[in-house]
Image 1: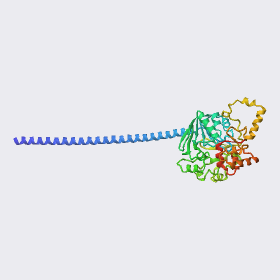
Image 2: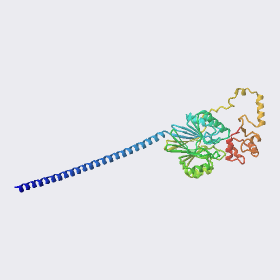
Image 3: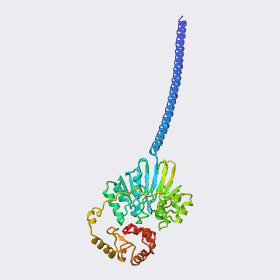
Image 4: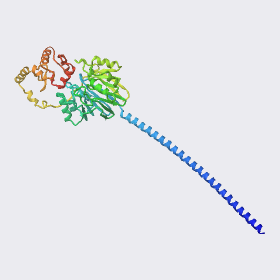
Length: 447
């Protein structure tokens, strides 16, 4: 009985232990299943997160692309707005000189102001219904480029003036500089690399970096862009200046080139023309000028590169109109101004004119006698030399004129009067460069 009881207890114990093992295995299986399930859920959530991140990245990228596209579109719209309307570049026929009016939809710029012995720049500008100029540029001090600057300053509303900083010695230069300094206009002396935006016009100065002492080669040279159309305006820059620009880092490529120094063979070098590679070129010179501008050598270099050439000596005013994309060229042969400008007041103008009208015939006769003795002329101002009547001594007040050349002038004027500075090349030893120097002094009166 005892053994049977022990056996029963033992069996119960064994059965209890087996039950624990079963439960333990079931628990372990349950835990394992739950772990696997949790792992699957975690993996699924991770995949979902990755999908969401990828979708977010794609959306961000798409958003960035859309933003970039919008920005590019806005830039294009802004660019189009900037170039809205037409720009007309007026290469004004001012005889043997330079003057260029850039008339845009939101800007007016004048580059050079013609000769000192003429008066057509202000009337021409007024004929375009323009009373205000945003910028006036005097490329250098020669009187055929800043000759009417004093009249421009006196008759029009000028915001800003650029000059190259050289110190001219002529009366023309002094009058021009005085007119600028006495005005309310801002004054700047730009260097190569300077840029400016005036309305929808973009300007870059490409020369000079510094002054060399040569007025022509120190000319302010500037690139003016309107939309995709560009102009290279060179003043009287010659070979040395052109070489310096070619060897610089400045972008010289342009659609339209203003030919340097009136078409002289000292300008428009092959290397410069190749660098600018214009489609069209314009020179400014007087019809039948004694300098022979434009010189055949320069013309041949230009036309041999299939550049279309226009000139004021041949065509009168040359007008180039662009919408910022394409451009058209028009010429106007009738170059006579329709009016005259008001001359700035001088000390002589402020004298009492009535006293002159009351002069007696005796006084007039005395003055005529005095003129014959001194070689002066009533048509000339104080300080000027009347080249067609001055004495040999008075003629030597002119720079580059000594005893021998003064004698030549007296002999030459007996057969034909001197009518302009270009006529000085009739004198032995006076070529274009010396004539320019004499003109810069500006004291000759062609009575």
